[in-house]
Image (cartoon, rainbow, N blue to C red; front, side, top):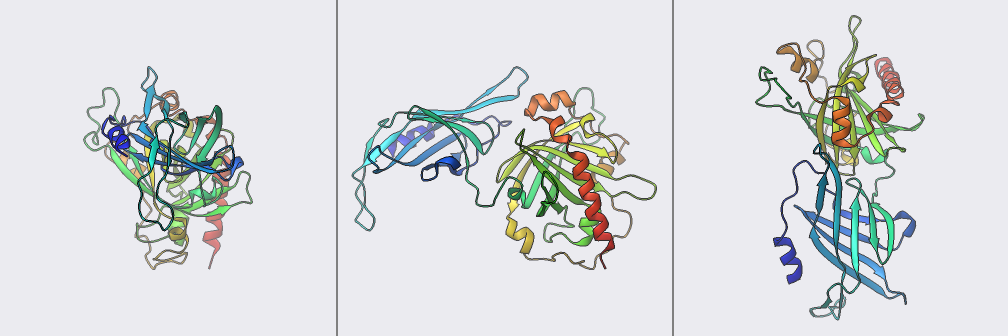
Length: 360
């Protein structure tokens, strides 16, 4: 393992704007019985593979080294690649036996290359073959995977001559999304939830009425749309929504967010960079400690106020953010394709909100 330690020490840091592949079990679902464990620490990827020799004998391999990031002329991430040699081992400790150090055969299994497309999808080249691989999920399909609690950080960045913007010294704001259900009556299916009243409770009827959440996975682009009601509508005003356009893995997502009014077009922007992280499991979202779907007795003292209203209250203007072209160039997301399903997502949210209002 001295070789591995040397590789760890020789690696430089990951660029801050790059996504990080998720550590865990990876596999090709069409090739059950063999796979990889990927461990990611800083800018180091450690690969451990379990597979078989031509005669059927089990074989495990190992490789470690730096991830290499490349960017285009606009500073947008283009590729995340790992290349290395597969080491094999023999003569080590058997199950239940006294320890015996294995003998390493550096590079004996040949070269390996992993081209990461997203945090949880990649192409693996080894043994003269290139196959798609993905992070193994025991949660279910891409819609079901979104269930759980997510915490997001939004960068209301300044651009150009915006020195008077009152939030320039602290442009970061957070959001909490609790996704606890799926509506499979819609095509494509939608995941459902709320922005909870606080981080220690789950979705109650107030949160589902005033700050409900819905979204879907676009199988064509393999990207995800998440919609949050930021300010509920009234008889005299329409609702305000956040639209998150993201690449979503099992434990993280990254992309951009825009703010729009009901009947408006979120593609007009401006767009703000966002990163989200899973902070609790599906089981917590559905059955964790705290109130379930019943009211907790707290009524709102006045009209619900969202983050968008608080941001605009200082000078009446939202931060300038990114244009649609800038957002797509920065993230590689097909925002128009994701937004095409937005009317169906909003229709589902409206129908469910009406059901909540009718409930005794």
